[in-house]
Length: 360
Image (cartoon, rainbow, N blue to C red; front, top):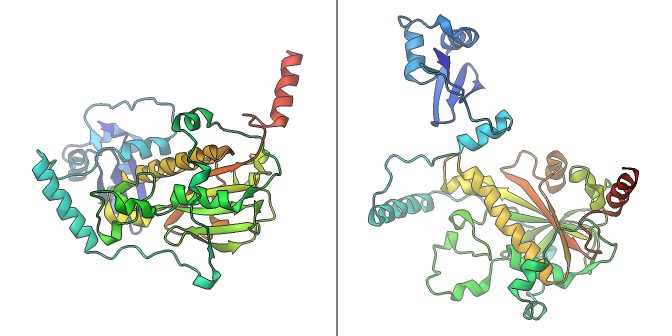
């Protein structure tokens, strides 16, 4: 007899929960079952087909008659649990044609919309908001998609030069803003709760991504950390910049300390779970953040700015900075832009690499 390799155990006093993350099944174990499982993990040959607990383990696929060798993808156990545990959307019956799918999907949407939506983020009073100017289309009307795709690259060498508030307004509106222009698209009618539309796709139309500005050197805007409110196209000041440099918030990448402007992208997990109550939804949070970040990079490139991005967040520090500790909204990604020399690597690394080449 063998122990199923796709299991993890959660402490849920006074019981344990054993979770088969391959098949999305969970079982509560009392002390007698937990003790017996520990014995079988230590020595699977102790299996006894006359022991009802052992038989229950076998029927639940906690034990298997044949060994199973997991694929060696060179990942750690948490990565394996994430990937395998979010495979295959749970579904009692897969629709067999478009008519069946439409009926099931409509029923699901009606059920979601009949339940209370997650509460909106707390917003400052209107007189405390900083309302941004409308998007400046002339700055982009002569920029081709081909030019932008070819021109976009990751830079790690930024100057102290500021960027303008007009550029920030355009970036935010086209990246995270609710596009008023989309209301005129034929067939775009949606329930009010799902009516806001951005330039990038969003799982379920939920717009679960939010944006928080790190402003170090933007003309016409005091330095600090801001929350962006897409429905108002406005900013709300959260607080001053931290005394520690930006690099300490981003995994020690200190070449970025001179960056004039950046955007932390977060995800409202409670929004996603409101419509999609299954583990695969967690994948959608990162996919949406990827869509949004690419739009930011493309718009910034179109505006003539150098760009940078990273997923290497020092999460505990970023959560504290944004006021998101123990919140269902969590930071996932960071994008930034400014003026620079366009170098892929910072000067310190270039010098170090050149010295190494000379020695070798």
